[in-house]
Length: 388
Image (cartoon, rainbow, N blue to C red; front, side, top):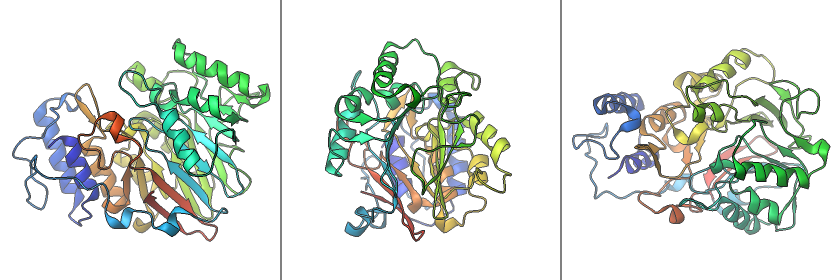
């Protein structure tokens, strides 16, 4: 059994064991392996769950517990609800936001279908069509959180089949040809005054300051752009620095709040804490749901950040969503076990959702589209998250 299978089991067992013990055990394993990023893909043979059960290669993986699956009624919420679809594109992010007043916003679109990755654009397009957003329809806005292909790679397919009224990106200059082509296409599709690059800019930005309110999701939804960077100033290496340019949105509707973190790392999380956590009015960091940064990597979702965003949220109202494939980068499996345990500790096992649920040892092309996640806030404030 791989680390990823362990992650899936821990996410979905639905048991009530103390998760802090799990975190300590995983940290001990990481230390024994030398460096967490160079861990073997399989845990030591002596690894046991807190309940004493050994993890063996013969154990199966259930994608979700019954109470995590959407009922027929939950799949079709009223139109005056705020709906977020976390589309399973395999490795990558793709979020379709439907507002209570009819706006449609796409944040990221998965990868481009090269080098063994899925074509996120085709997956997103099929999902949209199945949910009544037909080809030829117009997005009120399309946002790219940052210049990594598992977030923007699917956009050429989206641009070929849908209209776009507004385009938003952090504004980081990049030499990547594929992203440059994507930007050129987006620039040609929208009016000059609707091309917000960089997203935070004075004049001509979506907002002029971090934490500024933004009009993307309609008049009924409070929305703030908490962060966006057009320079690589945060992080220890280029990859981290690009991730930390991410657009970070906060949405609020009927007393419920959602954080969309892009691929933000701990450095950016710490800046958000310093800037917003003590605010007594919006924007602050209070949240019911977090789409966690960087696919469940240990670079992100620190205990300090989770404590900050959930400090005023009852445990029963806390949720977390991971968008990731069962992907190994340099020996590190995403999502990472220690991050899973920290998230479980913050929100509870049944309130942690992931687009890699049940993927186990599936090939990349077989792992997409089977774990789409729906988050809904109704007009009466009722809030739920489930697998579609």
